[in-house]
Length: 171
Image (cartoon, rainbow, N blue to C red):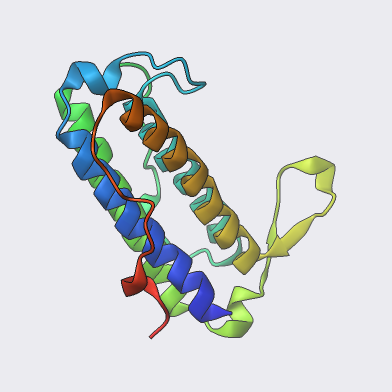
């Protein structure tokens, strides 16, 4: 199980870095334009990916308090981003993705099955295994990168960040 969760975490880290590089190649105006999605702009989608990662890290810390200190206090910016905010958002997402991989690498198989308390669904279930939440975090990012892919298609931006990342296969 650990190899699979680690594969998803590494793939998320790699794909987010590729997406950030693509978006960095766009003008600030192109990143900030309202694209009629729930999170409005491309930078809004990336901000949401970071926000969710930080949220999941908070859940993970409830099970392993010493973990993920890199994202304590980290927050995604809201609204239209100035160039400095964009730069910080990119650095924060890279750091958060690295922290996710480092956490998964540090945990044993038994620790990956450790129950993590949830704060949703009226306590039903009250907790789920950490590996399940790690997989949900990967799926969440995949969903929103898919939205980014569609927008880039509409803009005519060449990309292939949804290809098969063989380098992320378990070693």
